[in-house]
Image (tube, rainbow, N blue to C red; front, side):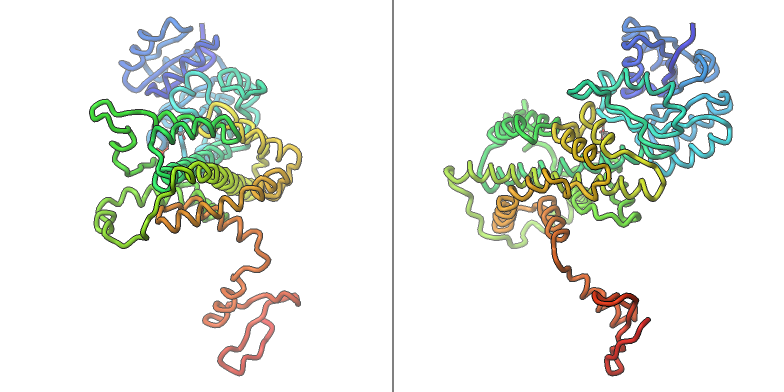
Length: 477
Ligand code: 6PG
């Protein structure tokens, strides 16, 4: 017998993905650098389906039917290159290497181009949903040559999560690095969602005076409405959890320094290169990095803050409703920014990504899965050339309805000294986009003054320079 798919790299994500293929009726060749993991997988889960354990790279490749489909699940970076170097010489034209790690899309582009020379299809595939998703149905974002999807796509569709309407949460996102790019932005949005939820929690706690257990209840209620999402659901679980050792709320015994593996940071770095304002995602990355500066925070604890007067119990409930509005409006803005970044990359790299499809495959399986994503799908399906999510009439109306509360929440946060960089950046983005005039005109004037950098006029075509030191006459540049 031969295997329809192979998985090399059997840490948790790799083994769970292999088991998912096997549970769906595929024969799966499994391989790991140290064979102990391979044997452990067969021993514990061999009964779940048809596995072929391969000890060597050669055995592994020989176990696969052609065209070979070889899924690499190793740590992104040098390990991926090492695996490619090991396997590529053993493969034949038409075979596929699928990289399911969180690779940087630029690495994926480089690898795809190099392997194309040998006729090997390299498919960089973003996979979201953590360990649980890998086993029971992740959201999958494959890039690479479109031909590869003909034979790979149906298998991925089978093992992927399904949205509420039954659609598989996988599509051919676009060529070369498009899949990993979209996964990167998914993670950037994930950071922003988490930061906004964190700010909502802190406001409910410090301004409204609720306990973590009460806030868990509030999140549970929100999760039955338009904020219905995996992240809100797990937030309620985390907040309701009580530490066994101390009897304190779990959230109070965890060190408040957030870590990151880097995909959120990449989202911001690339956005800077593409010139896309992803301020909400950037604030989420910065908030994590600020939290980690322990010495700086210690040195700053005695800095003056405002006199805080928490709300009365009677006011707290109304405030919680306002926070829901602020959270929802800010969420619309982060998704607007994330989709703008994908849109810009689509133009830059000629990727022809369908934004409605992207929203569609994020509806299930992934970390940011949410009812909300079906609305984004609908917005892009109705108008594929939508200039921005904020131009969608429904979203614009919802923000219009939320904005007074959103502003009030920021007033309260500012008065009480609760940091809300995500909410604030989102509102600033919204207000800047709607502004009739921006102070960018003044910036241009300053640039022209000190560096003769020129400016354009509102009333005439062309570039101009004012002779600031010499009578202030204007010349055409
Ligand atoms: C997913 C997650 C996954 C991982 C993040 C965590 O989509 O399943 O995004 O990829 O959990 O990389 O990222 P940080 O460690 O950077 O928070």
